[in-house]
Image 1 (cartoon, rainbow, N blue to C red):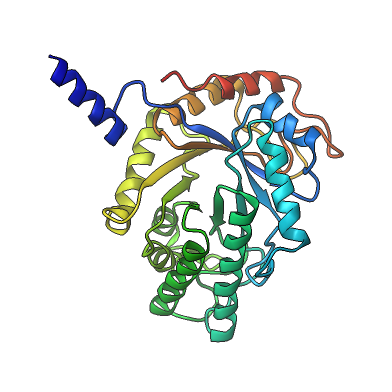
Image 2 (cartoon, one colour):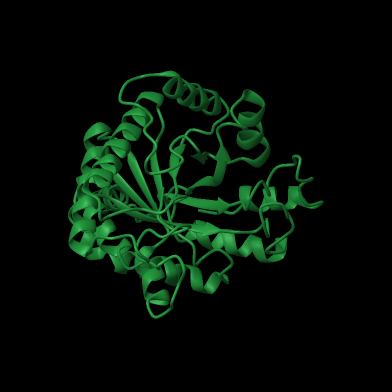
Length: 326
């Protein structure tokens, strides 16, 4: 009997299969480092809202932005941000990079610039003590089709080299990729989108995943306002979408996203009522052991020049803080 209990405990540790598995950490997307970088901000996110990490924007605004190859003022600003937030329990922070300008896969010099820039960003993340990098692949501007040049082979090779540059610069980093580009491609491939869609995003991620990452997290968006019954299915579908890319290579987990507040960048009103948000985030917390992330459109989770948070904001905070019952 003792041997059986011992083996069960070992299996729980190795495979994270115990009923008492750790609760996932709660992330918030996103915080602008220019406007939310002091102790008051850190205390707000860590103690009032109660998150354990944030996606931090505008360090690398565009893929053509170079943060520098050696420590400089920007690197030290990032280090100060991380140290300040960590004092209030906000430890798992990620440098978030989005697609705010059109990508160009047809120009090798530009592609080489992407490779250099992401390698330097990873150096900065390591220096500053960030958990890693969050790569938002949603085409806010054309990136994976729509006149961006290249082809699947070129983009996959570029993804591999970008991944290599980051992983070699910061071997201990966690890479977050969002959204699930396989899912997004499947639901949009027959649509004529101004953004060009997600066609080349799939080979790009396949290239990224050819590195021995310490950990990769896929942040998914189809859980944003999903009924609880669908969330585990969406998480399992994402594991299935990437099984051939990650199995036997690196630890891989899925982080469900939730979108309760903020209808637009200047409208903080509810997307989901508290009564809908509570079971949504509870189901998301049950479906994973790594992270659950809150998408806050604009500054929906903080009062500022665009207005106050919703009157029942404490109820949303309470629902998020009590979501996990593991």
